[in-house]
Image (cartoon, rainbow, N blue to C red; front, side):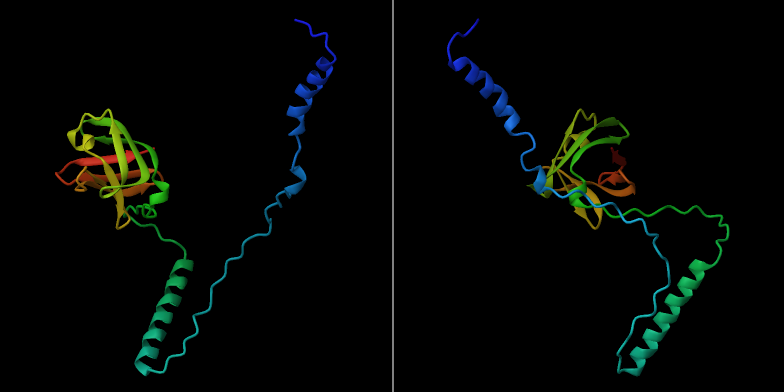
Length: 185
């Protein structure tokens, strides 16, 4: 179809000019990112805190605490000796804002999907499971952080399970009724 009107060139220019008008608008308003500093980080021992105590008993306690702290620093600087016990790395306690999203949850009966959100709900925040063979996991409706651990809860707010962080994105625990449960992503 061909337009033989004097408005056709105007429409053609308008169809090309309007989309291009937005290109580059406001780019001069943004400052480029500064590069990250490249200076090395220094490690040195901090001096003991200054105390202004008037009670002689309190001064003795403060001196003992300072000596203990200095001994700990000295012990930490000493070369490591091989130990026969297995040490497990401690992970930070669970935080609400880092828990939302999809997880794979499993117990003795199999695994399924657990979705956790930060929407307020009975007993804490909204949670839902999908495709779980376990009746314990099917009854999960909420979750919350209790003493740094994850508590999975039912519709009435009753605790079904409590799990502790055992990895960056892994939690292990047990059901209130007994049996192991874990979730990860």
